[in-house]
Length: 235
Image (cartoon, rainbow, N blue to C red):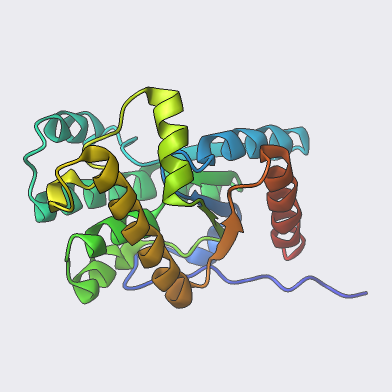
């Protein structure tokens, strides 16, 4: 009888001290993508499916840390954060969730679903001119997920979805701090185009899966379930 090969857990860099990664028996699944890409819909579907299959699930995402999430939200309201301050705010938010939510959940054997991970944070910083080597060192604490899916959607479709849902565009998600355009609509298209290109570059480094996010939600959901079933079969 063939025994599924177990993929060993690993950190991307220096990791966290005194942690036995092989004791992390759960799975970390990441869904990446811009606002309007359908991340929330797909994660909700995956949670429902996984729990129906008997898996305990935990959800994490950006700005959900009990340590700095409120402060980060307040700081962003003024639209005056420097790129380094913004980067360190998000890195702190991530580190707190990693240590206090993600790793304990994986140690308990849970399925952790992340609504974005370090790839969004790195892409945002790279688009803003941050040093790539510095970012890799900063996020060297990150655990490599068991699977990462990037829902890719054209900026032209993203702007339609976001406007239909929120009736407005976000300052930061439009990249207005970069001075790409004085028009928010035009800035959004240019910024999201840069983000898409940066994600494609990161994909060549980290090897995550690019998923066509313009298909019907149920088609994407079936695709993700099939891919995750393959991850689960590996043990």
